Length: 397
Image (cartoon, rainbow, N blue to C red):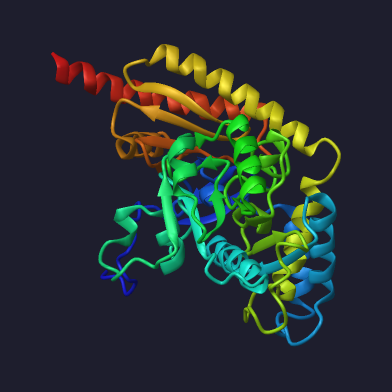
């Protein structure tokens, strides 16, 4: 059958019908252990009963009213996020790209409101991924996403991560902000050292710049803290979050200090669907679980166990696995074989992982995984690595 869908995805030939916890069931009944979680989206796994109950209850009452009216569950979710973070205000959207668009506009408007509209440029970092809109592909700066879509949106300057001489040279009277992911997900699970994040905060303070933290993939408990920047002891001025915050329901948010958001007055930004009652009900249900006592401790413990077992796996397959990266339950395997081939071999072993840049595969399991899930995943990774290692040895001979 010829698909009517635009062919922008190279889809694996599997269709899933249902899921529970960290497991998915495909048509025909085959079960897969999900260590991709919809690219870090299904933070609480599949069909989490608390999320199902929240969505079902809300769906029986009210789906949409628009932001022309008050949305009480949105007020509640915004307050909870503000109380749990550095922020004073929240703007809800539908995705990470939209949350980043809001962050970019907010940073520019901050300076314009202060009488400096010339300060609109934002420095970003090589290997970044901030979304697929015209502005966010320009922010990411990767040619493979920009090519063919006309002139690159102006206002973004990329520098290498960790190159502070290049960064300081890139700061001009037109610079408004720095924008960075504390761990580059799409870029290959490359962790920005905590000391580097502290230096970025200091640079912003010294030059009157805003610090934007893109926590679309790293946020909502993924690294064992509510947000990954917390490990460095600094706070941003603006932060985007999405993916895990909706637990599978489309939801993004831009959080900011009152000072950073001072230019975002009535009419300056908007959204039709962002913050609708369905999304707000699910977002509040996600926070019920993630903010519960012991939950983030569980993520840290599972992340440590998984990383230790991956280190043993690397020792067994040094020809396949070159390095282990990441924090918490956002881990990556840097490979000596093609990452797409490894992902396919893992899929053949009924384990789902996600390819990334720099020839890495990401392990982004639901945050509710257990010891037995970790053991099963490593067994299946072992099988995938063993299969590829056999091919390598055969090719060498």
